[in-house]
Length: 290
Image 1 (cartoon, rainbow, N blue to C red):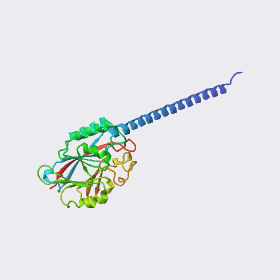
Image 2 (cartoon, one colour):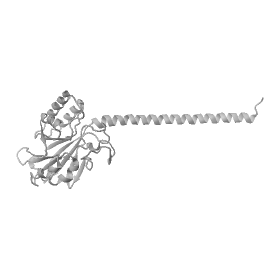
Image 3 (spheres, one colour):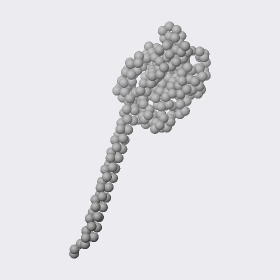
Image 4 (cartoon, rainbow, N blue to C red):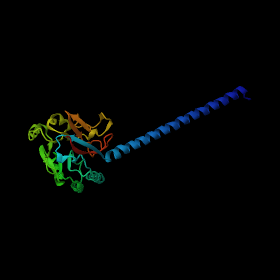
């Protein structure tokens, strides 16, 4: 049977249409593969960022604190404040932290928050004590700490414990500044009555949300605990908010004109990852304001 010319043309056109369909499908497949590949790369990079860079790379926040209440002998005085070590036995991270702190040569070191994450061996505890003892501070090292099991580690590491207490800090010749440690806000009025309204006072809080009740005699306030939200999709949408740090959890606030600094901590807690909340320490320089 001889195929008519019209049938031949129809067959050719159908073949052309099928070829165009194959090309379209191939383009869609190639485009889909590229999209999936890009998404996989983004996921891998994101995982690397939140589990490696965001959890192990420490930021040093340098702040100049100016006040007319700072004694002349404390002008240019250096304070390092860090919190929530949550040490899990990672020696490299601990070594790096000690190196960063000692490079700043602080006059005073302040620590708050949980010290150990989970259970660690005695050898790792001994290494922690050894490294914390390597941190040097002319005026001393102080910690606000309530856990009796871990408090002994800090004491063995040459930290003075602030437990609802007031300490006078002297430097060179002249007036002191005061460290005020408050871990029980119900006792705050009794503690605050130990000093008058004059002089430079650093208020250290166990719970950031206690700031509203403790601010009125402070020159500046410090707290940790919040890890600055730990995982923050955007600055005001953080997944990690613990009791005592739900109102105040970001790095800085002003509470009734008193500067309030909240440390983001060093380790991780609930999620073992960080996003938009890098490990950090505060490095303060006091400056007398005339």
